[in-house]
Amino acid sequence: MTQTMTPAPSSTGGMQSALTASKLPRWVPAATLVGSVAVVWMLFALMGTANLAGVLVVSAIVFSVVLYALSLAIEGRRKAADRIATILVGVAFLLALIPLISVFYTALTLGAGRFDAEFFSSSMRNVVGAGGGAIHAITGTVLITLATAVISIPIGMLTAIYLVEYGTGKLKAAITFLVDVMTGIPSIVAGLFAYALLSLFLGPGVRMGIGGAIALSVLMIPVVVRSTEEMLKLVPNELREASYALGVPKYLTILKVVLPTSIAGIVTGAIIAIARVIGETAPLLIIAGFTTSMNYDLFSDRMMTLPVFAYTQYAQQGADAQAYIDRAWTAALALILIVMALNLVGRLIAKLFSPKLAR
Image (tube, rainbow, N blue to C red; front, side, top):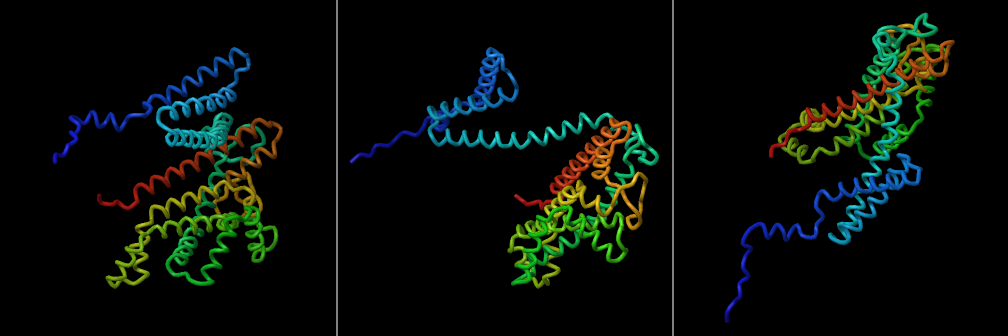
């Protein structure tokens, strides 16, 4: 009885061609997109109704239909469905970017006119028309945000450590429930809480920077708790068990093993929480107030912040209305740039402090 042996492929070229058969070349999606936009643009131009939004919408539909048909004919139903899903995800991503890009572009074009040295070196004291700046608002924003971080980050981290490492039973469930409630609390309620709290000790009508920090802390603490809690849960239990097996007490395991492992995510979450509260206006209007002069003391008198500065400049326009509007847009642009810088710092810290795993 003889056995017939199937000869092996003579080269890797035949095997590769068999694996890549029934597959669209890589340039086909890009060429289909360009062709769809060109054809739709010409059709709109011939009809005399060419507009960018209409061309983009119709081009996206034509591109999806054509690419699906090509993929269905050559690659099969599953790959065609995968390409349609990819297109839908990409369109959703672009739609989400539209308002973000629009806001940044508007603030950039309208605020660039007063983005000068005077704006960042002078206050609004005795200024009723053109000129002036927002150094007092920038200083107030920095001081109140730093005070907020000093209050919120330790409380949020310790709460998260308790929930993940120590908490059990009804107390843990109650704290988790309260954190969830605080996450959705309206910002103006936080301002009213800080005002009521300080009024108990200092009397009605109190306005000071530390009150703004307390109000923002009510908003920031639950964000820090949630982000820190998620980062601590990502630490493998094997690391904790290995530390306990060596006789290391629990508190030292948390300090030397758990926190260093998750520090990158914790710091990133804290910076994102700061960026979340730095633009709040309602609570600061209630408790920190607004002023045209510099104030470096968090515990004395009113203190201006950038969000409140932008609001008051736009809402309380003087004789030279355009000057007030220009200052409002420049303050908005400065605030956007500060939030962008904070997010970039968070990403950099996450990259620098993330655990380096051996491969």
